[in-house]
Length: 100
Image (cartoon, rainbow, N blue to C red; front, side, top):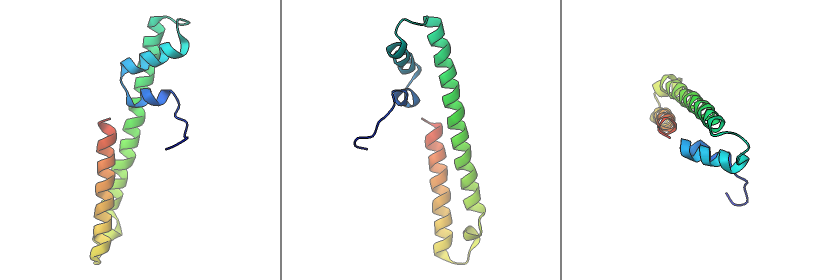
């Protein structure tokens, strides 16, 4: 999006542990020790991974909701198709989140 501010940690969220170390060093310089930087990176990675698992679970729960909704069992073909499409979309999102 044009003109939108992306915080510096955004790079870490999608990046690797090396990116996180680089970001921390760029932010705090030599004010903390390399061991402290490693501890921060591990904590951030753990939090990031927990958040990804939580988001994927929400998507999988929505997938099950759409598969078990009344629309999925409806006699109206377009309603069944809508429920199927939304369940597939939720599954796709969960898979994408888990593989980031």
